[in-house]
Image 1: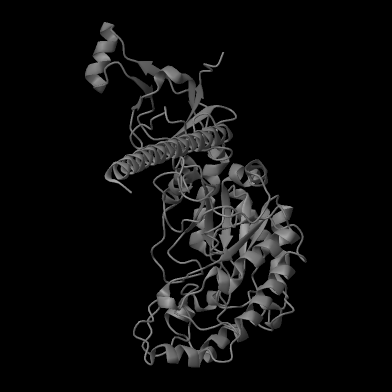
Image 2 (image 1 turned 180 degrees about the horizontal axis):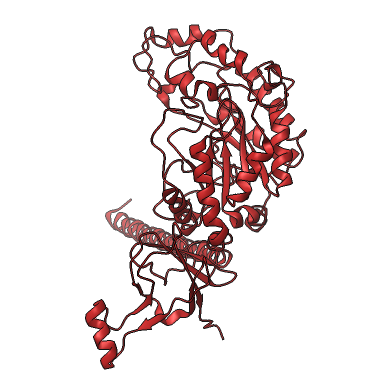
Length: 528
């Protein structure tokens, strides 16, 4: 082949290469454009979903920007609307009673002492032999709850110690084998239902008594060197853990749990709440995971028996969208409405009157009644519930200190429960005056100002133009709203209040004889 032909061939090859390169660039740009279109299309769909969520939460709800993370898997076919309907009574009622009762009530130092103090089985057996709550009266418990305005109650059917308060067929470690001999769960359910209170049962996933339950870093039989929740210094390391758990079979324990949950959800009528407790996957590799409990199977079984049941989030099914119904901040006040994957969720803070859940005779760290009520109000103001615990004594009575608190709460709820039931977070445009907490009823469109710190004769009102009428909730006495303007009189008020162009409520100088006074505000209907 001559040089001319070579050059022509070379030129043709170069042109072909350029064409291919341009086609490749065009294809890359088209692919990029399609990706960008798909991204914004999906984002628009997500914001459309967010708008629908805002409608379901109310016109003033704040919805987070859509997350770009993968959506968690679902275990059930229930729609968000169906779930909201199932939880509707619970999110309306807002306030419940927790009852921690068991053998630990005789030790009178809280419910975790068997683990915390590594109590021997021989010593702990003394409590089983001597358990006889002869003063127990479920009707009395229920009347205290009813008077305090508690709309649901949850009893520890079995706590971590493994002792069962019902006549179970699957262990001899039960209340009907003590001197008491009665089925306390049945009496609890009957008495509370009779007072119109919904019933729930707490079931511990841990069981320090069961022979097949493997010893972990939160067990009374910790191996030498292991500290609670910290097995790093265990003498003998992993070989020690293998040795102490030899022969134990968690498969048998999982069946035991399922059988017991089946009893509780079959033999005691309608159960409105089941409170599973709890999953702890860390602890240096010696905790318990959702797989250890077969949490998914346990939840599906519970729902198959009682489809309406409401379940807490402590089964550890955090990778699912519906493996729980509400989150459970314990002994904690949230700063804002909790979210999961950017969406607001149902939630309930569980609180004690003192520091322990079980009866603790010598404990002096009791909250005062106003503090307890402020926690309830704060929870409702963030869209949540509060379940308040009482730990009965070993004889089955509520401690006198608890009774005093319950009476204080009853007195307040008798006059002010309208600011709790059916209420939620106030719309964003309503700023809480200093020293107050707001709740809001979206059905009645009434706003409630809780005077946590009583301000004296005036209370600034940042939303004066929204107010149609205001009154103290406890006695329906009018609370006048004053506005500052340009008149001489109003200018004089400015010198007195320091609030130019603002509004304020005129209050009695002396705080009313109410633990936390509440102003009920009827809002103007600007929708007309």
